[in-house]
Image 1 (cartoon, helix red, strand yellow):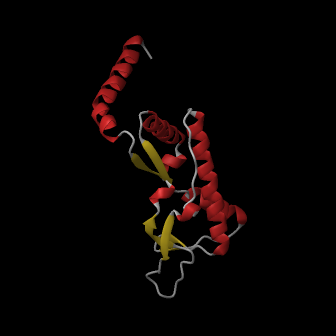
Image 2 (tube, helix red, strand yellow; image 1 turned 120 degrees about the vertical axis):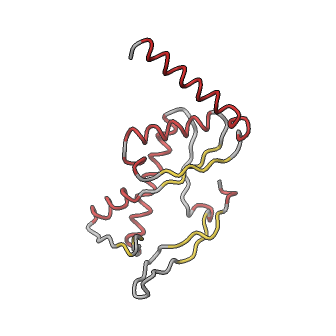
Image 3 (cartoon, helix red, strand yellow; image 1 turned 135 degrees about the vertical axis):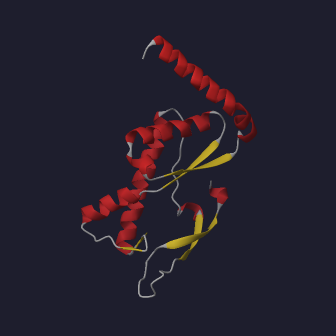
Length: 163
């Protein structure tokens, strides 16, 4: 990168920060939910960018809360154990064995996120949806009355005090 390109990069970053200042002032100290999933979890450059952005949000005074998925990690471990993955209308049928793998895979994703954020010098804590009764849910019924989705549900409440 030449001197001119480097200077343009710094000027661009300064412009972005100047534009963001009113929002930083207005929302500093507020909780901010960041949905993290899909390609952002599998593309290493996107993953690094999201982690850096979340660390920056924390650094400037926000209280970011990352809500993450883990579909690809779950599928990987289900395949590795030899279980069959079934989907009904886009929803993974989740029996007891699958639920155990889901919990393990999501804990793995959660732990990696915590380590990546802490590697940038910010404190982080991983919380499961089961922790402190964070979520309440009801069983989700399939559109097909002959199909049971197992432990698939719809969230009916969030205990924000846990956060």
